Image (cartoon, rainbow, N blue to C red; front, side, top):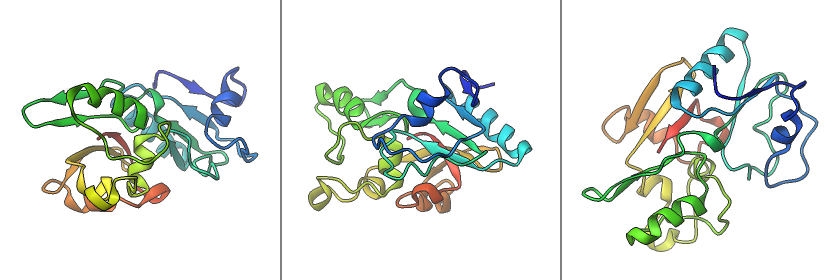
Amino acid sequence: MPSQVSVPTSADYEQLRRRGFNGRVPDVRPAEIVSPNTTADVLCAVNRSRTRGWKIGVRSGGHLFFNSSLLENGMLIDTRNLNKTIEYDPATKVAAISPGHTVEDVSRFLGPLGRFFPSGHSRSVGVGGFLLAGGQGLFVRGWGYTAASWIEKLEIVTTEGEVVIASKTENPDLFWAVPGSGLGFFGVITRI
């Protein structure tokens, strides 16, 4: 089981349901709000959702204006606590981050290393949502779209309940589908 599962009768359910940038939260109530810590937790949640016939919404930073990751009688997977360790390889100069990290989290980690993350203007945006929205940020003219230009590979839990790696050479069709797919993406990104 994931480390935290909240149902409508849970004490923290309403706070979790309303978490996000936009205070106008629709009266939509997922059957469960799952806050996983690991990729294995996400896999467990996806498989449970499949057996119950629930649709899944995914939230990273909560900046989606219409809060459309909330699905009536579905499952909301909130990635804010997922894979929270940022890893950096100085030889390749590649960082591995979580979709639940905010732009500020990543920038604070990379800054002392002399690196940066080409992001948008809001530091509280979740990296997962930013990338699924295409990664159009302040540096797009000089550095290109973040999702298309800066991502090496992704770890994804598919809707079929498999953990896969997607890159330009491994599952390239899935890798290609990520930038700009937004809520239409058919999986849960667990590592970037």
